[in-house]
Picture 1: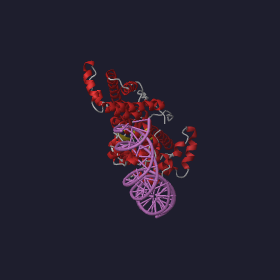
Picture 2 (picture 1 turned 90 degrees about the horizontal axis):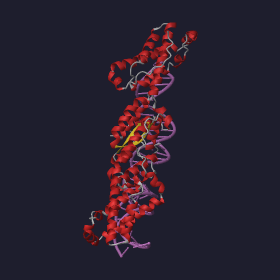
Picture 3 (picture 1 turned 135 degrees about the horizontal axis):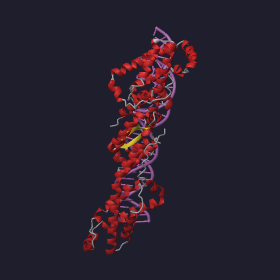
Picture 4 (picture 1 turned 120 degrees about the vertical axis):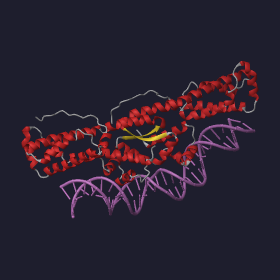
Length: 212
Length: 212
DNA sequence: GAAGTAAATATGTTTATGCATATAGATTCA
DNA sequence: TGAATCTATATGCATAAACATATTTACTTC
């Protein structure tokens, strides 16, 4: 079950889940970025102090669990972690919906391929499972459209919308976001297995497994 | 908080709990005894592969637990720990019972203070909680009486028992074991807190009381 | 789109340290 | 005391960790 590679993988997902770069993590732990890279790729058999340092920063703790307690413990761990980023996913979907709405409003006012594409993509990404490793990227792109999201939607404020669209950088931001979201969608299509793996079983409450 | 030293301490207690020597553990893990010594004394910052190897042999597994899940996980581990060596405790009790029975048979055949004392002690130790750190000692003493345990009990085989008792070393072995078990009992009486700390999983009663 | 730019990640190289082999000290029991 | 067993120390070798650099990836600009 727990090989060195498994722990390494856990560390990487824990890091990316928090939107940290290897360099940022290195800053927090005192470990050089290069070493973190090797650890995560499984190229080294890291020392316990390194593991503990990484764990601490990632809000994790190293534990020796009796085999008998493993099912129960794993169940708890599984149920705590997802609930934490459930809110994250909800926020992302909410933002994607707002962007889709906004983009369509922009299309009505001033049709453009970029706005249409952005609307399509934002809608599409709400319907598929976004791989864990793509989450941060999507969030980043969405974040860059914060200004756009804050625009008024109501038809009564069409004038305000038009005014905003004339501001510099808005159109390029939409274009950039559309490109990024398009890339993510391509990745998902290209690697469907990854997307499948991202799906959370959520309820696998296997208590009581007497075996050793 | 898990520091390297904490893990090291956990490993040592896990080993002694199972009555393993450093050499025996080294044999099972492939690690040299000398290195296990250093690990347990906190002299080295062991590598993850070593930790995992040690854990596996000790019926443990390494896990990265979210801080949020720590209380629940630790609670599970605490409550599971005693039952983890239930098998070991059961074996020990079984052996103690056999020794008590056999000693009484010996007393009937050839009364001696040592045999009586051994019977009393073996019986007594089945009724008290043996501190973890005394387990190995008791097991060792019990193990030295292996031959005695294997003797036939039935009255029809009294002759075989008598024959065995005439063999050299048997009486001294009984005496030695009685002394060791007596020491353990004294320790338990002297340090009741330690005994209390060990959770008592009721008495594992075996049938087969063929003593009239 | 394509090229440029900056960030993030991966790859060499040196140094410090874990791990393997052998040996010595410490403790227990007869 | 002497034998046996458990634990700790000494030395060579493999490699994790630190430092420096290269490469890839992702975003911006034309």
